[in-house]
Image 1 (cartoon, rainbow, N blue to C red):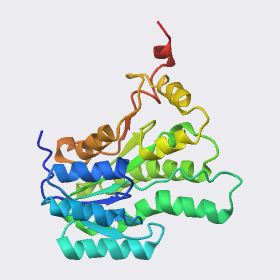
Image 2 (cartoon, rainbow, N blue to C red):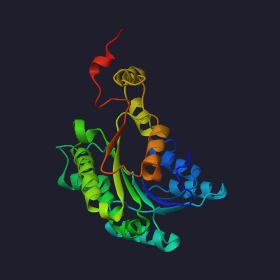
Image 3 (cartoon, one colour):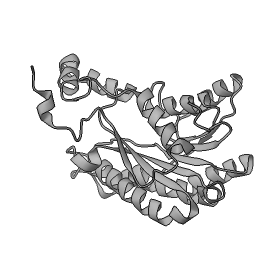
Image 4 (tube, helix red, strand yellow):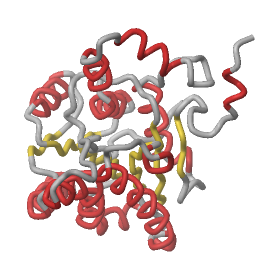
Length: 264
C-alpha cells in the first residue's frame, strides 16, 4: 500500500536510538516509504544513520541536540525549515522510562517532564506554522504507563499522562487547520533497551516468559516493526479521518479480558 509519504518532511525526535530501537526502526520505515526523515536526538548515532540513508540514495538530516532545551529544539526545527521549506508531520518519539519516583529530587522530576513531555510541546510549537501550511499530522508516542501506572516512575508516568492530554487538546486546537493529532500506545515491545533490562535479572528467560504469557494475542511481545507500521499509517493520508485517538498496539495487553489467558 502506498502511504503517500514520498518526499514528505517528517520530524522525528528520539530517532537515533540503538539499532532495533523504536526510533531507529521508524526512521528506516520512513526512508523505505520515500519520506525524508529529520532526526532530532542527543545521541551521535544519528550522524551514522543519516549518512547511511544518504549513501543509499535517501535524503535524511540529523540534528544533535538536548531535547530538554527549548532553545536547542527551536534552533533545530528552524534549521530544518530553512533547509526544506516545509514540515509535513511530527513524530514525538523521544522517551526514557527513567525510574524517577517519589524518592527523586525535584530537579530529577522536572528533568523527566522536560524530556518526556515538554519536548513534545516545544517540537510541535516550533513546527506548527509549517504544519498549518501542509495540513500535516502529529503523532505522539505514548505508553501503557499513562493508563495503568507502573510504580517507581512518577516522572515518566506523569509525562506520558500529559502527552495523552496534549494529544486530545491539540486535536481540538488544530482541527480547523486540518491537522490531525493522535497517540500511539505501547505496552510490552521488545527493544534493545528491554533486552538489556532483562539481562540484568537473575533469570531473564523466566521473566520474559512470565511477561509474554500475559499478552493475549500470540503470547508474544510487540515488535518494533509493528510499531513503525502503525506510526506511518497514522501520519499518512490513509488515516485521513482519524484524530484525537489513542491507538494501542499491544496485542490486547491493556484492555482485553484476562480470562483469555486461562490455560486450556
